Amino acid sequence: MKKYRFTLIELLVVIAIIAILASMLLPALNQARARAKGIACLNNLKSIGFGYNAYQSDYKGYLPRPEGVASIPSVPPYARWQDLLAKYAGMPQGARIESNGQYRYYKIFACPAQAELLQPADKSGKTEGFHYGQNQHAQSEQTYNKRAFFKRVKRPTERLIAADMDKKPGVTGHVYFEVKGTVANNFAITVDGSQRHVNGRGVNCLMGDLRAIAVPLSKIPDLSTDYFFGKDIKD
Image 1 (cartoon, rainbow, N blue to C red):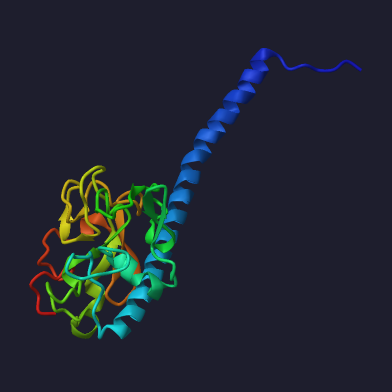
Image 2 (image 1 turned 60 degrees about the vertical axis):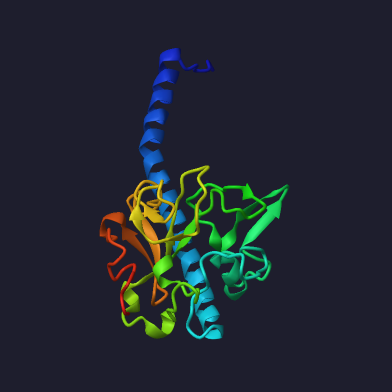
């Protein structure tokens, strides 16, 4: 029996069909992957919310201070809110892994839609704030703002605690924000970096009632004095 051999044209046709099918499936696969990362990020924020709830029960309704200061000794030095919250969120080993002179946030403190970023081990703050940030106007460092968040805020479903954050690489950054702005602003939910979810148009947020929700960036107020951020508002 004579064996049939594909001609070059037939092989090219088959390859072209496979390429067309792959090009049709790839966007769907990318969207599914993005949705999965968005869900994982929301789960991270929910876990962080559990940590906030446990923390505030020990600290009379206050949130952890967003960043360390020289006058307040801490372990690690200049502890960020993630470091202070870690043991309350089921991570007694801490929020950061350190090796070879660098460290990175991991597990619930690292957004799965953001690339892994190594930072100086001296905790200097350079390139900080690539994953999640805490709302400065909700924070509870008593030398700056005596707000016992969980006791005072009357509409917690409308007040932000933490959210996706991004910073310009190489710029000394922070792990908190005060308003919506650009990536060059060290104190902002950024309009050109944080929107990793909702098809690239939204930010995952942890609200005052500890719900983790996806919010389109267009729905986030531009002014820090809006109730969403809470600057200068008597709860």
